[in-house]
Length: 257
Image (cartoon, rainbow, N blue to C red; front, side, top):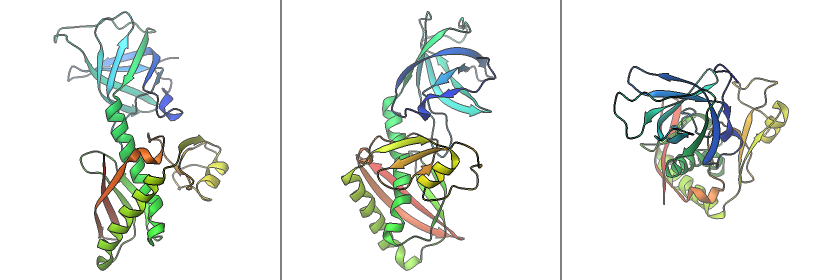
């Protein structure tokens, strides 16, 4: 594998794997002094899809100092792991031998929180038709801990918002209490469409093999992020606000322990 080959995204197949090994393919050093390590494969999720990146550390075999991963980014098929080596001064220049085996470790608490927030956003999508909001179509989402929200095309009448907010929270937490397995499927286009209720969004090209996530017995949805293994692991959702403006509705929420 060369440095221009796409990074294998191991979290695509196994969203709950927290330790793995890989091979160092290349590295860069930015103007801020941080290194960017490029590996042949990774279990660390790069920021995208409304979800923040994983953090953690990488141990290069034969090198004493751990590489602390601050941020993970995806560009043109390549994943860059940005960070610094632990307990070293600014003049430290590590010997980064291409082809070296490395061990990767994901920050478990951050992964679990991000996965709960992401899964909760999808669960709200599932709950909207159940409380009579069938007309709302999924749009953008922000699953960051500082204020997660999901946005939909369509509006909710002002006089209904408070009741719908309570209904949505109750419905979501009822599903959480029952639980249900969360699964990932990488399927041919037609099979993926069938699993998602008969159609896929326009941005997914025909002939592709999209990654579909199913939450319990509900229709699946195309998604590249990480999720909990069971709906019950979300624990509890708090819907703090529903706001409609200019033909769009935002649902603000959080997850609680």
